[in-house]
Length: 257
Length: 324
View 1 (cartoon, rainbow over the protein chains, first blue to last red):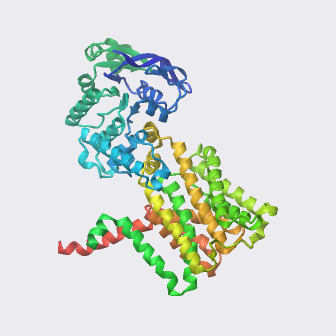
View 2: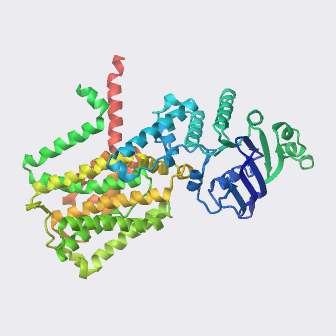
View 3: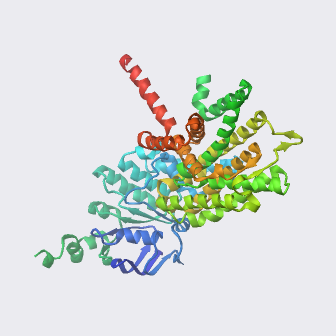
């Protein structure tokens, strides 16, 4: 399988704190890769680097053969990189449907003047965008909540809308930051199914998650970070029995003594 | 039938109702009401633009009087000093003010929150000083008189009666255009930037460009309003474009409920009427506006229109409670 994303010698330092250190990582296409690790391991920093929220201190990110150096985040979205946030960040005052329609921003072209003068092209485009948004909401099972204010949904539903918002434009790569956090066991199963359906849409999934059962049941590959460094990488089974992983999660025997 | 219409097309119906009411007022024969409503219409255009910027896009401007003044001065100078056709002068004023907003927009929106407020405040003050001090062009503190009337094929907009319809024609056009924009792809991008800039950018929305475009649009509205203002008075001077007017515009937008086009028009009306009422008491209006701003922000941050609507709902549900 081809690599959709190559990361070479990636380092990010915030002042004296090194969040990601000399990381090399290749992500295979149409697969679910989970990034796990204790708090402060650099997982979200890695997502932000790939999404272009801030530039790396050193190193390269190559997406579909193209170096993303210097490319701002909104242009990376256009390249086919989508994401969700740990703290959801829905547009609370907009309807659920409108949230997903913002996700389709780049699928439309109409600007201020098209809207001001009701040109027919803009109206047709609007209809198409609305239809795609409704279909995507049906995918996450929230089609019936389309007209509700996004801020009025439960936390779990809000997370699903955030996924729909990111999936709607059919990106090549989607990064899900803790999609199952704060959900109950049943919801976690539904989200796991949703992730599998997203992969079937030929979208590569990179996810950060703390819930081990979720990770083991969803991902084909697990990468473990600790202190910004990769300490393990393999199938869920391999990683689960890795001594260094257990040490990172439970603390070194010496440190505990 | 009527009820179904109210439910299905509330906006269109409200606009129709507004048009009917506004159309009747001049026939009441009260010259004072007509003149106050002309000023309300002019202020409302600026307030609607500010509402798009502050309410929908979430970017504060404490210097909007600058764009209003720039529109007024360009129209006045071109039509009076250089004898350009007043309509052409107005078009030039709108184009130039919009271009100016684009030019200052990119550097100014590198700032956020309080810093953005300070920068826009500075912009307003700088332009106001230019209006006062560049005597040779602007006529200095005493201004320029003898600005021509607008006219179409010999029909002069020289009376309040005629000018009233011109102003409200423009104002309603601006309201309708703004409503369409807010509901469109661009409007969603604006509201997304307000909701979460980082999330909007992750979806491909270039927040800086959205902000600058909305600033430019609101500057264009302000320039239309400023031009009409100067053709109405056939006179221009720096005083109406000072910092206090920028603050008044913010109060109009806030009182009306920031994210509501209709609210902005209502706010413009309420503030204008209030300052007419307070006129005999000198500068008391400034104190009252300050208090009003605080009270609205604390009690009904959604604005007075929404606040009153909520009160009404509560009143109705209390009245109906015993029968349930």
